Image (cartoon, rainbow, N blue to C red):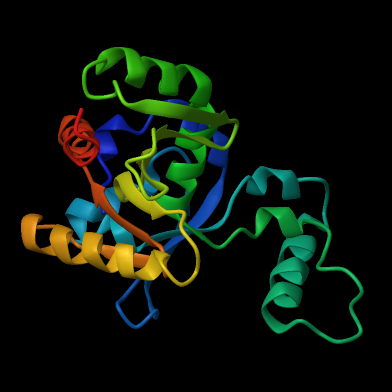
Length: 230
């Protein structure tokens, strides 16, 4: 998993959280610390208390929405209790349920970064950046949710897929499109070969698909090129 670079988190991300409640959990899921703040306040404890940013959670965000009168705090507490205890006679989860988000900081940062991405442009730029390595492209799939590059068939209805950068890195996938009987045996050969050649975790996603993640873009592209013979 690629480490979070706190210095690269933009101000617009912190502004989007508004007034929030945050916390740090230990490896057992118990709370080490809970506090409130605005901006990048949650990061202040990384140095002062030695906390790991990977264990940071945003419990509730945009709490300024509760400042609607004398009963704002009551609405906040009611919402939190309903969400936690789920009373059987409550038909809704409280007035401000969208504010009680209980989400890891990493998850929120990823959501924000993904929302800023233009997948169509990103895919085209990747292809243009590595014309030789992607000389075997047969198909490109680009949507608002992501993109992937698919090679021409390597024979036996086998393809190499290259996926956009994710939390885990760029995904390189070998997909065998043969029948249920033949496909797994071919995938077995690829899995065995990759495990021998690569110092990476090779995952058998299903009977006919093998993939691995690479953090460095140039290295990932070269794996794709090697597998396709580009």
